[in-house]
Length: 189
Image 1: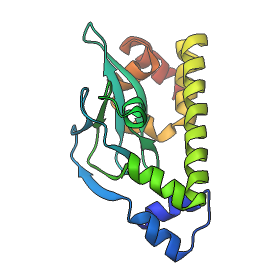
Image 2: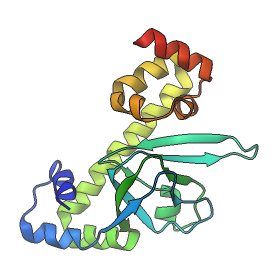
Image 3: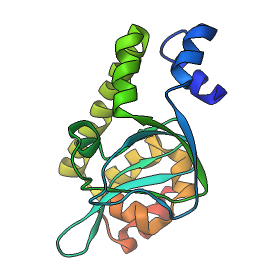
Image 4: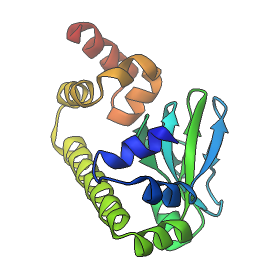
């Protein structure tokens, strides 16, 4: 739980009593490689903080094609947020790509924690704002850039993910072919 405290204290200071209260809302889950945290159609019971591993959030279109919305690594939050916040069945999948661990937080726990401890409301607002900004940057990049620019930005923003994620998933995330990615990868070295 020390990693949770360090993660929160990057934004807000905590005393021991506050942290003891906060950690009571979280549960630890160990995750196997290729295990799903969320499957399309599931009730979305948790938001997850990644302690270890790489995860992908994706959906499958009507033609069976996978579309990756997000990768998440250590100290990132993930869920099917429409399902989580709206309490609707999941439209996304969340899958672990490596052995991992996550901390699980329910919506009720999140709301209660934010109402009982104003600092945590501030923490969640900052995290949500940063996530929204990252999503807007990703959409803008997908709509208005070349494959090379998308690859360069991905490499700049997430340098360690290039080594940890199979190329086939990077191609899906960037919206490029395997051939294009191989060419970009070899010229970028």
